[in-house]
Amino acid sequence: MSNRVSHRSPSHSGVAARYVTALLKLSEETQSTDSVVADLTRFRAILDESPDLQRLVESPTFLPKEQVEAVEAVMQKAGISGLAAQFIGLVAANRRLNKLPEMLEWFNHEAVVSKGTVFADATFAADASEEAVRNVVSVLKDITGKDVSLTTHTDPELIGGIVVKIGSRMVDASIRTKLNSLRHSLKEIH
Image (cartoon, rainbow, N blue to C red; front, top):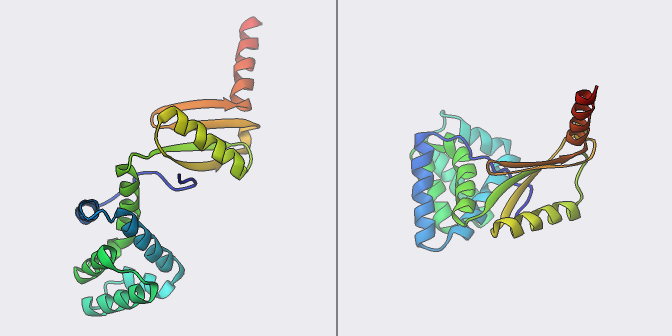
């Protein structure tokens, strides 16, 4: 059960779509999706923390050989191997490293979706405690019968309560909405 994970389907180019679709299919066929997700997540964390690696990924001035050697060194040091390493190496060799962050985000999203996880948003009036988040995830899991990936938000204008969106459905149990309904009802009386 995952929470506080971005669940919006990442926008992606045709190039990213082809690479990610192929990787997802291969990882499912080899039953290695979880390890691929773990390795790609580790690589993404390294990428996010390294301005030098970011420049290497984003800049078209590096030669493909330089990019491949650099990402291979990073992966070896991080213990990233197997299908994830082959994927990143192929992306580098094909001069698509600038699309790698998009591919990593989309692969993680698609891997979660392929497992039947549903995505939900919960907006609280104040920062939600871990217990409140667990309770919302538990209720949504009971309702849907599936694992739930929950993204939490804070909106002080709610005053209190919660707004939950799952798929195309929304439940607004905020004090703001209740007060607005009461205000509207009182206007009809006068």
